[in-house]
Length: 218
Ligand code: HEM
Image (cartoon, rainbow, N blue to C red):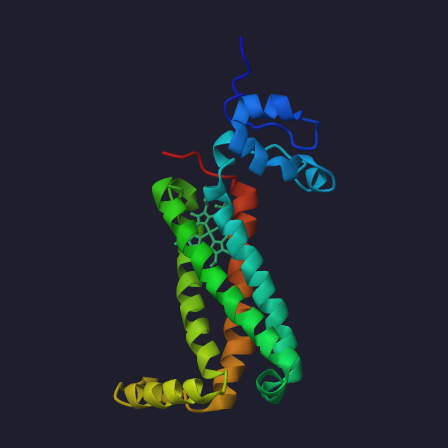
């Protein structure tokens, strides 16, 4: 009788897997795209079995969101270390600011694809509801982080937006505690408060995936 796990577990990537064999199993294009995973040093990074249904680019979207998040933290730390005069007045500062900005775009791009994948494969079923809820909160916090990032930039557009946000917030009772025009508070919320909570939430989210494994598609 054939191995019941055979359908669910893909090839162990740390084992040699010849091109011809791979081409036959995966088709030319897919085998070509996946080549890097079978060449050193990458093959050692992927030295674990994963379910065959997860061998799809759709299942990489959460990981790419996570990678973007790490790059955001790294570039954000450099920006915070050198301050607004540096990121608005020097070429290296501009480039670092651009890297931070474009990484934020890739974060949301991959996050949307990740959410679509989670919906389409019904990955929120059963005990994974908790991870769905954690992801949901992380998503809304990320939107807040995005807004405070714009307010903390400190250039003309940022000041314009903060002025208008201020006008809007002052019409809503209870929200007058925070003034978007207060640059220091926007900066603290953006560089310390929300990232700290996001780091914990995303850390728990990814750990839960490790513990629970990847859900089978519907
Ligand atoms: C905020 C940034 C987020 C990061 C960095 C992240 C990261 C990840 C990663 C790395 C995985 C492993 C599987 C995969 O990559 O597809 C995963 C799985 C999962 N994510 Fe996210 N995620 C985020 C947001 C969300 C959101 C907004 C939701 C839903 C509202 C969500 C729901 C889930 C669920 C239910 C799973 C389990 C999937 C399964 O077992 O197949 N995630 N996430």
